[in-house]
Image (cartoon, rainbow, N blue to C red; front, side):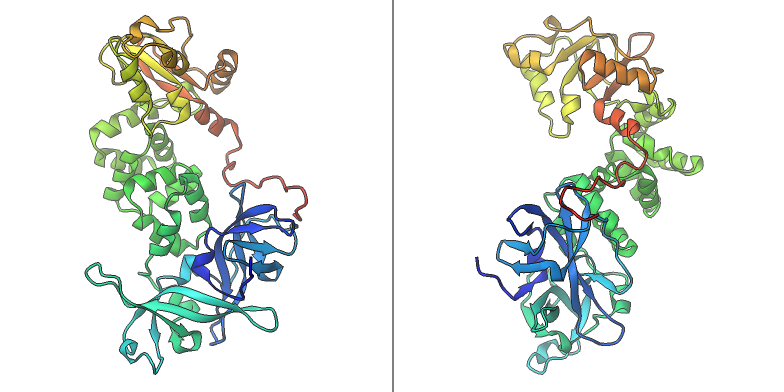
Length: 428
């Protein structure tokens, strides 16, 4: 492929980064430029690259030997694995510059004179010194009545407003970041949000829908979940908690002041708050504190076809989908009498019209709400399970513990943000 010496920064987002031998290193997630208080042409410092481990690192632009239509190639595979940390004077193009309001002073574009326009991209170009500089700015007027407005390309010196102070003004849009997050897994978005400057981080949080935000919060350390939740007003915070899994909502509320937690619980819909209140009664390091109150629960007269339809729910984790629990009505936790469980593999081997009552595994022991974390771990290891029932003394199913909840408590408290081991061939 032919290398180019001019490219638009937003088009680099998601592009594959290759080593000199063609090995995949990761993908571009942002472009770092230097914008000075003194009006100087912005210089490109490097790329924020997301490794296969989801760690985001900084790669100096001088390590880039070629930018091709479908890939960025580096001069060496030895890169620093230190997590990217934004320094003073550094600006993220996708995270901070795009959607900024600026003014254009181009004599050939008199129609834009005196009005605010929005930055939609930056053109970067390699100059004779091999440095990459910002040379062009793509702008367009604000959309009106949902209509897409014309985009204009202007020289950077004909634009005012690209200054550190202007980039910190409130109200900048986050459309470009939200578009970049489309299709990404919640944990990938959570990692990206953690790397954003505080101002932009809270703007993204405010712009996300309640369900999407709930999924993302669940992938952050609980202390950071609490910090972000406190940035929301009470009504929105309660709405987000309603969208979270009950066990994750309980863990998050446990990080808050008791008075604040009670206010949020009172504002939640009782149907959503009651399971959370029950979970809060248990110690977090017991089966009762680890469990979710929403496993797959079936009545005895449920057919295999109906059971499989329940398990196909895309919101179920693979662990929770591995086991269905059969109970006497009511089937909402705490349920009627617990009868046993049915493994997914057994359901796949039976005729669709078969009733689950005829294939129940009644011999699998169950956990109690007081079972310790160590006991739960031994239980999974002994019975080769990734999900297990939690049953009280009166044989009511209270919920289920899944292996991901166990691992979350077995790993170090900061496992989501702790450093990974350096990869071979990389410079730490």
